[in-house]
Amino acid sequence: MTVPGGLRNADAQGLSPGTPTRARKEAAIPKPKPEATGQTPEVSALLARAAAGDQDAWRGIVALYARRVFALARSRRLSEEAAEEVAQSVFVTLASQLGSGAYTERGRFESWLFRVAINRVRDELRRAARHATSADPSTLNERPGEIAPPPTADDRELASLRAAMASLGEADREIVDLRHHGGLSFKQIADLLGEPMGTVLARHHRALRKLKEFIEGSRKGADA
Amino acid sequence: MNQDPRTTPDDLQSVERSLDRLGALDGSAAPEGLESRIADASAPMLRAAPGAATPTILARIGPSRLRIAAAVMLVVGGAIVTSLALRPGRGPAPTPGSPTHQEPLASNTPASDESALLDAALSAVAEAIGDSTTLSSLSAEIDAFTVDPDSSLESIDLSSLEDTF
Image (cartoon, rainbow over all chains, first blue to last red; front, side, top):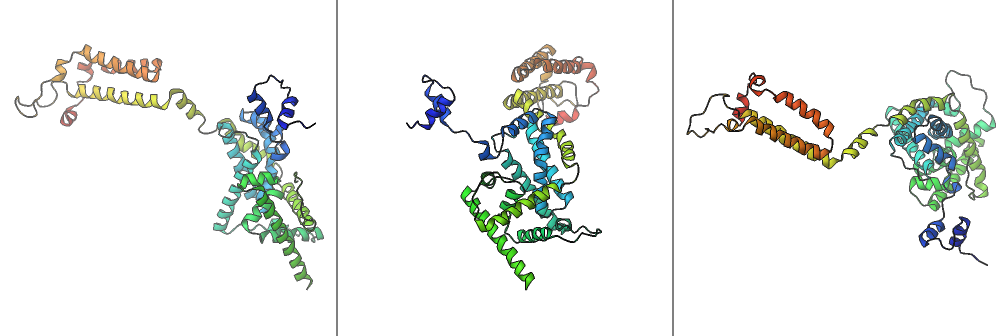
């Protein structure tokens, strides 16, 4: 026997047949699953505690996301120092918003956090472009003054991939960075960019194909 | 690193895995103590975020009440300045019958009337912002200023104010 979803939800929540209609309707509204937004209840609890001034909760949030924000900044060839500055600026903004009550938790924290991060990265890239110091040799494992060990096949593959990423357009590049350096789900990326998820998926596939073609073209050029 | 299972074409899966590896590598290459430095730098903002106190105070008093109180204060201030400026015996007396001649208004206003006017104005302010404690201290300050007008204000040169009026 097929049971309507709303009634099934109401039963699951222990609503009796005498429960008012409005309560039944609210019970029938599907709540976002953590895997859909990429945010767990633990993160929501940490945010609530941090907003109340809990320093341990705040450190927990920083520990969860600082490296991902740092990685996002590094993916754009920012130096270690610049990437750390970007990450610090993002968390200062977050702390300010949480402390003042300006941030309202709606289960989309990661999208919001990485929107702030991607804007900071853009600002930093513009600033670096003005000063023409954006190139960071360390991202290619070429630290000046150090004798680098001979590159392995893995190093060469990653260096080739970085070069291929530099060939992507800005829109495709951001999706790739948010997905693979920021660790966001496609749903979160769609939220962040204000695009339909189908568009984001299509652009991601297109970017992967461009990367593959670029790498294969480089290999052929090297072999020739 | 990715959590949502999306179908990627087979020929692109190796590129996707390489990108995941690159992302993990860049994240793990973060300098030692990154999290501590960021937490230390940002935690003070959590405790004392800018703009947190001001809206609370404004919300308690209310912008309309503030406007009313400011307007009443302006009226009270204007009344005090006017009454002081029009006191008799300041500056050259105009000739009776001349266009600038005025009856000495202040001389017709007893000190008790001025005080009553002031009290009424202060009561209006108190009613407007609902904080009689602050206003009682303000009233005391004004009383201290106006307690002996004939002696304490003698030294004030009001000729410029008389020119204005």
